[in-house]
Length: 485
Image 1 (spheres, helix red, strand yellow):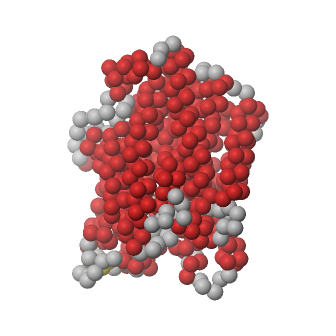
Image 2 (tube, one colour; image 1 turned 135 degrees about the vertical axis):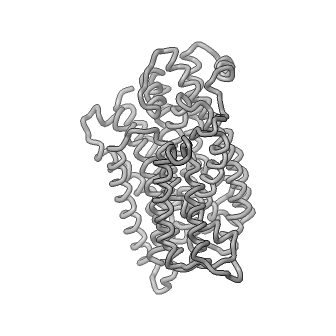
Image 3 (cartoon, rainbow, N blue to C red; image 1 turned 90 degrees about the vertical axis):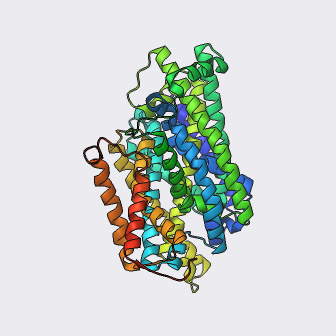
């Protein structure tokens, strides 16, 4: 596929996003930016959250991952489903009852100033790393297949991508994102379905025949039962459950969209609908990965990096139309995670650290000017992080993402669990130290787990260990309290 064609598709798609932005961002104030004036239709939020939850990581890494890990990722997805139930029935009622804009203000009300800043700080770290990694994945594909052909350096490519995200999120914020995510989810799902069709066509077999081959082969293996395997099915399930609770329920980006719904009932309907559809969509991605694996074996295609399997096959072997479908799908998957991250981080910094909502003396004009400055500063941090990741591209991106989540979301899991399930009061000034020591301890336990635990290897359950250590540290330096929020 010619670089000019790829670039043209990218520009047309971006222009469509800006059209939606122009419609939704008119007369948007700070309240609209943060929580969409609490007027977002729940079904629109639910549908759009599919794209935001999956992102470019799922679009490329999960299909490529099938070659190495079969369908074992599906057990993680089953865990997701139970995690979403906890969010809908436990966390959302809390957030709506306290009328939160930033979910981390709960920690201030429950524990105090330092716990609040610690929770918000860990979110900012987690989301910055995760979103940068997702954006890097897409930018790298554009670099390999477009910009390298014109000898344009990676940093220019990254800068263009970041500028586009800034421009269409700067004014409308969450009110714009709810609708752009809906558009992008549609294109992403169409790309997956059409990619399956084109692979079947190239192999000269119908989809049902290929599905039968997958079912009868080792590719469809979901449950790994070796106890010391890092992807043992129980570890996968509980890791998926708690990854969802932390990366969605304790994440400002994902909860900001839920809090933009009209009321708690609508937000819960959104969560139930979204979680059910997400299971089906993830299975579809794994089926696509199996199709890609069969295709690469039949055609003798040898791809070293699993993340490169889907783009290499789509852009080099399936013809121009399939390549165009892949590119649109990738961009559609990438933009929701990038725009949502930028908006949520702007919200967290503005509210949790600058306290804009508490400064009643600020005019709307002054508040907006500060928010714009924060928005641009967060984008700059993204840009620098993406450049760093470009030097470290050595593992499947989704594997990196969950590893990062294990270290950075664990303290949030411990903090919220302690707040929700105990009535004890913590020594607030020690919370930052406990939250920092917990990931450090986890790092050393994970690194030497084979020697310490008779061959045991930590997988995604590192998140649970991290949360448990934080919980234990808070318990150790706590005293009896009266009521909890």
